[in-house]
Length: 249
Ligand code: IYR
Image 1 (cartoon, rainbow, N blue to C red):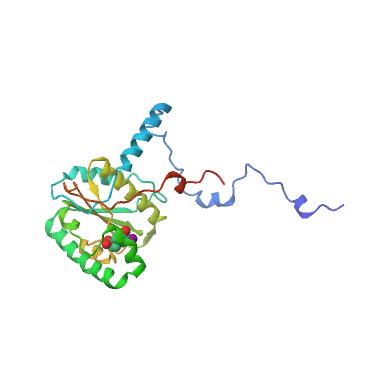
Image 2 (cartoon, rainbow, N blue to C red):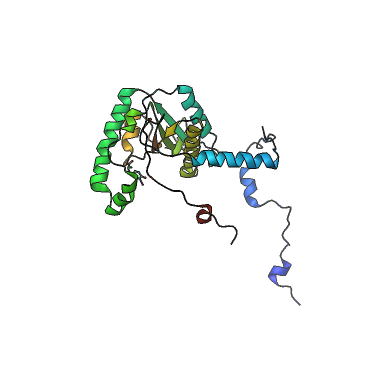
């Protein structure tokens, strides 16, 4: 009896490399090093640290009420270094930070942001959106942009630029930059400062005023400083665990 085509085909060889592996065979072997700095800790300490970290992070709030008290530049450097530990698509690290403490530049950015935001709140927002923001008390007045001692503007590098001007694609830029932003927010909180994730809309003016390249897109403006003694926040609750997790299907 003739064997069917599938029976006569060579059995798949588990050890055989799929053809795509050949496509990078001209490249140098990747270099791997032992996982650096990993320290196994016992379970009781794991739990204590996890509880402590959670309780500390649960106290983080976004406030619009910043003190003008100066903050040392090294603290901003450390928050940016921490943000830069984020994982990123193909390890392209597509985040760039502009840290501003010059009062004139802060005033210029505030004026530009308020001009756009006035149009956004007046004309661009839908009624539904305006109503959604109502409990947060946000409006086009951005006093925090000049009150806070630092403004940190986060840019996403949409693509890299090679020396010859050609574009080098970056991967998962939004996800990577979002993770970096989260780490920045956590770092600021852990050092006892506050920040606010301001999303001016539209953001094009930031690239122009700050002289960034066309391959970068502004993502967030984050004032950083101490909270004012009378700082207030909207009365919000966070979702309980049951509402945000599913264990298995
Ligand atoms: N970009 C505006 C509007 C705004 C939108 C959302 I969604 C917020 O959670 C907060 C504000 C602004 O920064 O005011």
